[in-house]
Image (cartoon, rainbow, N blue to C red):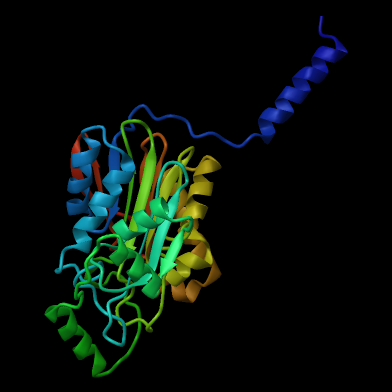
Length: 320
């Protein structure tokens, strides 16, 4: 026979379960370790990251190693060495990194250093700060053994001088089919980390900083839930604190792809006209190794490397 006290206990338990946040169910088909990177150059970045992950290495080491690949490639004009300059002809770099403990580091408006992602990691590990900028970031890098180098290549300078003839600034979606590289990984121990690095929008105003080095905008990692990174026009990502939003949407029970889609739709809702003119893409990975991506316009690609191999995929888009 059910007593009044038993009934009240059962009712209280039901109420608490309804109030609790939805949990993401484990997918037996998901795998770890796994690493994801934005754009076509994510394939090469993943190869380097996988060297670490496949040997049971730490996700943090993997994402840093992966990000350094496009940073050091002079043929990649949107990241690191050879990056297209601002309107004054200066290559300025932004980067951030975040580990499984919630530690993070970032650099903005950094010049003359090929690997800003490694400087960002040292900011995280050697200082009480999260972000260093401009000359302060440069001096910190030099004090820690980095060498001052010329980042503007002949090829990038030629493109800049051609741009100067009209000096029109308008971000173009999917220009050269790449942009910022964001890289997120889940290691064999089940820990997440992420990195994001860029030379920013080509021909930007001198001093402009986008979403890439901003924790919560261009990158966010929560080791209980998942990780996300962003690419495209950073101003639109900053306005919705994009990657933090994606992770919180996963916390609410959404799949990585759905979380990315909902974040993209929020951008489109806030400014429908502009959303049709620019590109923003999100890439997400949850604690179970499930992943997904979504973008505004067609053309956003992302690379996934797990035990089955390294593959490139097209992100689903809101607009055709």
